[in-house]
Length: 393
Ligand SMILES: Cc1ncc(COP(=O)(O)O)c(C=O)c1O
Image (cartoon, rainbow, N blue to C red; front, side, top):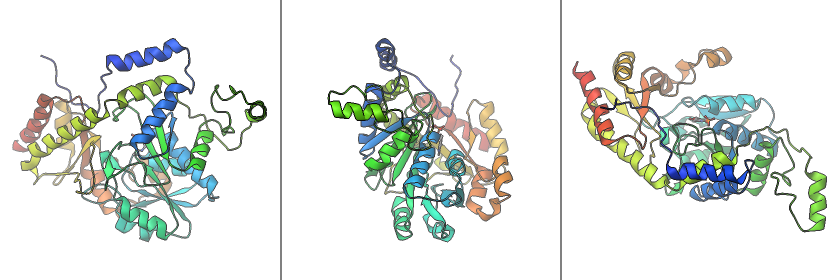
């Protein structure tokens, strides 16, 4: 009998995925080209956006999103950016790497997303942007966030690394703010090994992002096709500008291989999302009777949860025993994205956890397990049984 293992993610590439990669290899074209362009076009379409830009990671996408806005609006180093007090560390790291200052706001107890009611009290004369995070597959409460942003003239970058395709009040994540940021790293919805995407509908921002990820190059020349033009005047212009660097950029490019994997998996996005929702629904039903011990991420009626991961908070006691029990039984867990108690943040910001009571509770008692499309009904039942066995002991 095959050993049951419930990982937080899994990957089973199909024949089509492998054929798509082989087609790229046969073409002898790895640098940004037709496959990447098609992946970007399709991805933008699914996120109600005019443009998508494919980079080498979600973190790179976040980094250049903030860099582009900082440049466009002449923000100063030391200006502030609001981020949730519970998120993957990259959300706030990119603020520091852009020489800006993250200002943390506590999260909602039921959704684990940034609490819009606590944003206004964190705004100062230096605040320039908010980065709401759509955590674990659930969109943040965008209406009040956008309302506050408008009132205080702030810009919005959505960190959607954990949420793809999901709708909030009928509109898709990645289309609410100035820029959306996604990840295609391992255990995500679409897995390309490494990879990230920006979405935007602002052509000027799209051009800046494209430049920033390409060493700050003049965006007239981004791929080797760009000097392949008949118009003589245009050709001369490209020649004169193709080695000009106009912004302080990075080398954040991806290749046609990752794009081929992304494009191929995009074709089965509906199956991926449907199965993830099914796994979560079965977990919720099967664990319902343990609600005196366990709290789950709640999904408000106005939005869709696409469940990258299944978040759980232990209501009573120390979670260590439960975590160890699950791990011993081949159910992989991770802490629920604790941020403020990370050694590096304690060093930079001091001990701030007490100012964020919900985050503190999640840091202590929250964790997540896998909720991915490769889990069988037998796997799901196994997980449900193990939780019951633990609480029966
Ligand atoms: C909320 C959040 N932001 C950013 C990232 C960074 O993405 P990547 O690992 O592709 O750099 C992740 C990673 O999963 C994430 O969960």
